Length: 448
Length: 116
Image (tube, rainbow over all chains, first blue to last red; front, side, top):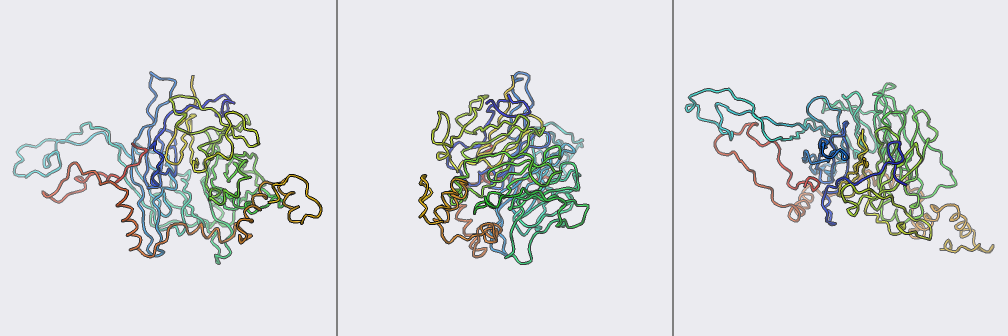
């Protein structure tokens, strides 16, 4: 089977680039924690556990190599968050970047929101390719001249300089979350955004940092009665009044901000009924939703739980319209996955540009694509062994039964430390960014 | 574990083991649950309940106080980070610096390897 993508079942994926260190000894700070394309796909941002953001920019397509879409090279890198200490609770606040979200571009500069567990920051990334020269009162190195030595006057002019990309923090949105922020989402009105922690969701105005509105609060008065937490939240892509949030119990609530100031009463509740006979100790844990993403059209939303990806029609709350098994063979490994904590891994998922294919990560550096139209799925691997330029990725197969065919990988030999939690799909083209623990792989569609 | 035995159980078997075999045939998930309960007999019956969630709400390493935290950080700093690159053009001594004189951003002490 060739591949999945773009509604055409013959899409083949090729290795394009890999970023990051080759050595196996991974420093904790280098663990990639988020990957996000901007709205044009020209920029690709990554965040890591060390609080750093690296932005790559796509080179314009060269006429010499029409078969290749441009490569992504480093554009800017900066320290977004630093570790902090919460003196009141004697707890460390990690600098790990949980999410990055780009704002739609309005002028020459680019803006993104990056967040750790407690603080969201708005960063401005701007280019400078000219600098003023010929001051009267200053030397070129910046030192002031003695005014008595100035005998002539000249008009300073702008001269070209080597391109410099500067990142500066424009807003810091702090002190609004008691619990750990898991999501941020920019509203289609481009003026507001939401931030969600385990129990609350706040609405911010991008211009105002000293206050936010609380729009969802599921904290029980008695914490002993806590039964579920918020796991992800997102604004609808074009209805500025609508947002959804997912829970650790596998439900999604859709809220309408026009209904009331506090959206504790949902407008819609999406929940798939569960067969009580099949309930086990693990049922609730594996039903916890780790990611929720609206389709670009806004008609559908996708949720990721531990073993599957589900597509929901926002007009139908009773059950998903499509369910795709990511790694069903893990169902008979749940005991050991609980013991090594892998059962709590939070996988993300993403849509392709025209909502025809969805993608999510798995273990052993595998990732999966599901073509909704052609009902095909494929398992691919991000590894240095398949990193010859433009080499086509070969689909992987996992053998679940007794007999293992050649080229198949047995479930017992899967490496659960090699997990792909974060993937991103270019908004327009078949270019994908796949993050292993500390490397970023970029794959492109094979063009003839 | 009786679940490993594929043969049909004799009717004299205890009802628990019978249920295990039946459940293994029906659901690998239940078999895994039985395995877990065998290893950890004190495991509570409500896994999604407040204990698990509250552990999740309070992630993050707790320190005795800020002194403890700073000591721990100092230990890590001595091991991991190389010295910062010296500034190329330092403006000192002649005058009080203004915002235009200062370099744009303090570079990261350790740059990300993705940018390397």
